[in-house]
Length: 399
Image (tube, rainbow, N blue to C red):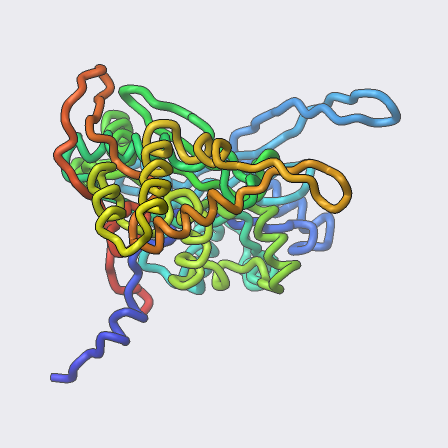
């Protein structure tokens, strides 16, 4: 019996790093003959539901309002009509056909297989002829891709401690281009996200996957097995949107093709780029433990005091408010006043140099009902690092 190397298994295993994706087909480029294109689009429209949105645009110093028309349809699991495989949306205004790929059609598939199966569904569901499908590959572009990591919390205490860390994490990341927003925090939903002002580039989203799955179970969209899979799980997700993919194409010459992005290394690169700016990479200690580690270090006593004060402030006020406290206002060469974060940044660098996360657990934790208890954890793993998160781990089906 032949042996299979670790390198082979790693290369041929999908760990579920890609959650979902959206593909875009520019139909006017795909089928350039107007008459033939309309025939194909008619087949799509015949099995789709019409949706009208009101679009307002300035034109000749006036505001013009008109209908923005979409034709939408879903392809569902043949064994569960409430579980979606593909979501199609044709927008008349742009002539673009958007195709939303759910996780269950991406997971364990390599890009070539994803496109092959998609074309089979286009043929079966819309009855599009092979002569058109044979040429569609060149006109399918990536419009969005979502990378995920799932952290399984051990107790409700750890869950609320993670929420507390999210609350004190930086208010903005990536040169303040992305701001943290509270989207929902209820009995049924928990979502926070870092977004840009335009919300067209990228998003870093944190949400309670357990609650999300609980809701899906009640609606009959998943079964008990799927629900158990994400029991006590918080999901962290980086979403690269169309504008970001366009920017990467221009700056790094990366074509907007799914095979360039459904890749384990690309997933790690882009996920870490956003997530580590919010939660760093070091383990997360309880505040008293973190300060004890500082005091046991070889730093000078006056520096130990300063670092402990910074940790205390971040723990109670949050990262961004603490940074503002330690910020100096300086005058640049043009005479303009600006903020100087160098002192604060030096303190953070020294804290991280001791393998201590600037974000620390409080000595008490509070649940949604306002009950307060002592924190029993002296440390929790950094929940955005791959080694601390769940992996789905299954061999690619096309091997």
